Length: 223
Image (cartoon, rainbow, N blue to C red; front, side, top):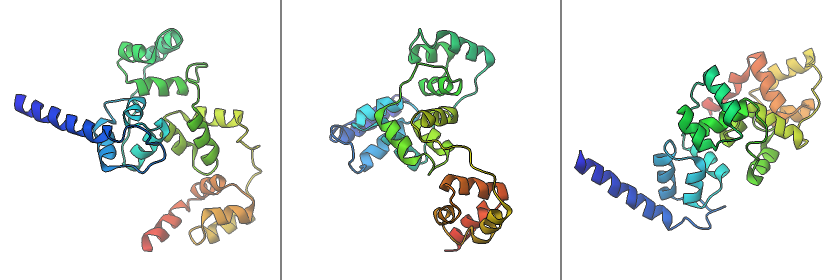
């Protein structure tokens, strides 16, 4: 067992050396194999902020790369007692202190604060705002929430504060539904959205409601 631990430590040291060569000024640069290996080995052990600092990259960039690599940080179940303690202490204790107190990860604590919509804890970073401005309405709120490690309510509320949301759309007509059923899977959602004067996200959501979302996936698989 001791030999195995020594081997692991040596491997970790080598990985750190490979990453440290690129740890400064990496923003906007292509990802190296050493960096991806570091993310794979540390994503469930370190916070995103710690990984970002080690690699010299932004937190959003780390989250996007982790998503591309198929890595996740599952959010554990919270009891009503834990929710109550979080509401009581989130202003007076640090995230790490609350994580230790409640035996949750720091990411889980941060996510839960968003879910409970507790005010004044985490400010939005400039790169998070830029990502939200670019993709809100083009990606689902679930996707954006996963990448930014925030709740869907937090995504929508901040998008609304930034003026990115639109008034509730009018109901879909039978003619629009007929057009969707005849063209979805044959044309890109963006083309259908333009033809109907709807947003890209609205078309994707309507396809799910109509039960035709799989048509596009089947067409992709046949190519």
